[in-house]
Image (cartoon, rainbow, N blue to C red; front, side, top):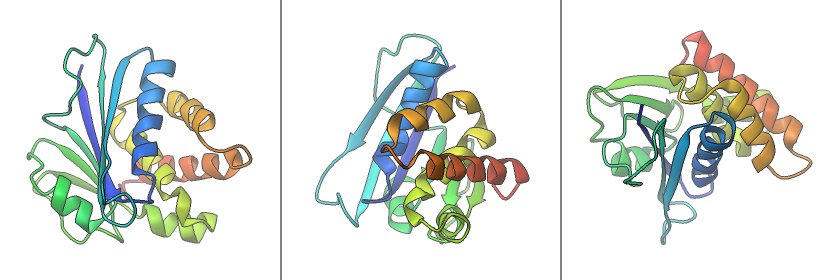
Amino acid sequence: MRREVRFSGFGGQGIILSAVILGRAAALYDAKYAVQTQVYGPEARGGASMSAVVIDDEPILFPKVTHPDIYVIMSQQGFEKYGADAPEEAIMLVDSDLVRSRPACVCREIPATAEAKKTLGRAIVANIVMLGALVTSTGVVSSAAIENAVLDSVPKGTEELNMKALQRGFELGRRGEA
């Protein structure tokens, strides 16, 4: 089944890394096909940024996300530029402290940045918290696959912090705070 996931936030939040990790989880650890794309530009740090992943059980013939069914939005500007037009049947995870608007689709509020700061002491892992919530909220990839992909992708010496962030995200996604 084809899943199209769009990530958006502001430059510096790890939006592109999140999509890379999700694609890696699908392709390397869940035996699926995956294609990841991203938008670079003057918005690289501070402005709205976007990255997307297509995941499918079949070979992907068209790699662009055209009809996202899952959105992960981590900033208000990201919502306005890349999430405001989400269709009603989509699922959207929003960083509840950074995104004021709510879509017409199913919306799951994840306090990713607040939890990363409060529980883990590092806002920089908010994207990993959000990935954990994404996995338990949608089942887009398996928990084991995302764990392996995170460990493959984060800088050496930060594995323990990132795994704690991922576990916190799993909890938020399961608890209905999502």
